[in-house]
Length: 332
Ligand code: ADP
Ligand code: MG
Image (cartoon, protein in one colour):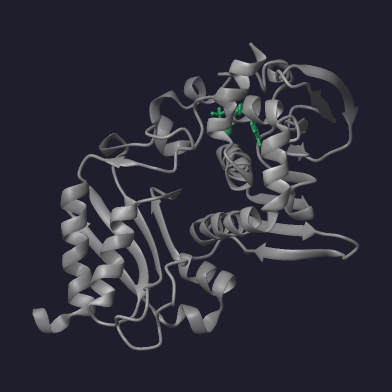
């Protein structure tokens, strides 16, 4: 039984980045305005995600990390995929199978918080009252330690996994205009250093400045493509012009309704249209596809990053036209 559980778990939490992604999305789902990600040894020793969201009510403590336990389908029944990232109740149960999980949480209705220590099966092993402001802290210690082979691979490649995590956090930092997101890491005997910090309550362009700097932001051009009256693509792409692109495609951030997603065909389209103009560089892009929630499916892969767009062909061709107007105006 435990083995089956672990095999399934490996799918939602694939690596450091997907582990933190699930926690950040839970904080966003909980309505947090502040999300504080604290790492020790790049996340291999400890990942702590603290938020000022709604907290978990005491009657839900026991089931919190059981497989398929979710509060979201009933709570947000009418706007499931639009309002919340999670709805399958797999992340916390997976993390419990893969790491040492402690959750400290308090709702506005309670005078103090409760610290819950979970076992590998997602059951509460112990709990006690502690002081904390309203919100939730999920601490994930020694990720993958129950799987020795995976754990060895993780510690060997921790810098690469950390790099992937930072790219993912950059995506949330760029798109989250009403959330303050901060990520710090403490490694070796060095002090804690801040790796990402956004202010919240500002525009995507302001977030680009915060994350990548003013110079970079000024190499971007706003783009807005409307497809019918219910579909649009909005954001920023590199300006047509030498010296504004990147030597690799590492700064292309794609979202569907504010959710970071992977859309290889869009990346390919961006590169093709841009490279027709400048063959040595890749364009940067921060593009949010604003779509009706019934026009795509996010459950294609367990980590929910791949997405199936029902109107993909139309979106791609409209985007191609706009990009060509930007990058190859002489064609028009
Ligand atoms: P899902 O997000 O798919 O519902 P998870 O395993 O990620 O499943 O989380 C299980 C449940 O735990 C959530 O439905 C939610 O009720 C609660 N939860 C998890 N993280 C938080 C958080 N940061 N704040 C408030 N509630 C949380
Ligand atoms: Mg979740």
